[in-house]
Image (tube, rainbow over all chains, first blue to last red; front, side, top):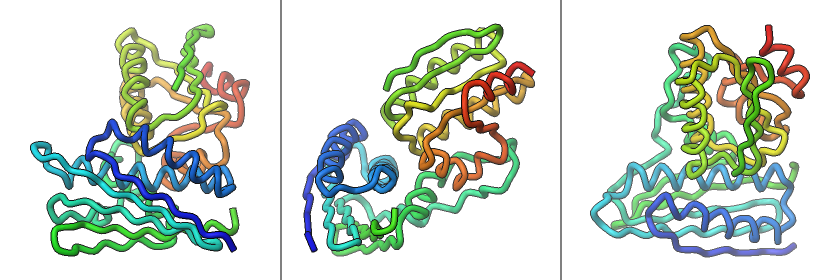
Length: 141
Length: 112
């Protein structure tokens, strides 16, 4: 079965999202992923990248975020690495998706979505690096 | 992302094409805020050509919905792709936002 890898380095700024999107578009298209899987992969990456840039990186320093995608059989493995402060975005509180409009808060939703569309997300702190490893099954959609 | 705007009776209809993400959501928010300031109370967002939405887009929709509730206004969403609709369902947004299949249904609801 085919195996395919994408490796990119982005500056730690939200303006890099367009670049990320372009890379993902050609990578996912090349793999022949379904529109649903392409959508979900984009979403996972946007939400995690945005969280890392917004909360994990200090604005005064230049940071880069390394992103690697690896597809093997029906499993997509995504690895996001940055050298910001020790920050685990997946600890964000789960939004109360059942509460009424007036009480709905906005925080935590992005991470909640990323988790919903992944099979597994793990965080590690290794030396000065934050490493997120996301597993996504792409066989059935 | 492209946003077209038209007024049908007293309903503001927005048609979105492309992606509603962290970069493009502020543009949509600006349009909606302006409409609210001008006293619009009935709005429809047609998502037929919307390929993508992230939490940034949801945030804008939530803010607008809350603001409209204060004026007893309405925002109706229509014609979503399946995987876009799933995002609204997972977020629980479908519990307080009317989401319908097409523009006719949306107009029917908004004009009530």
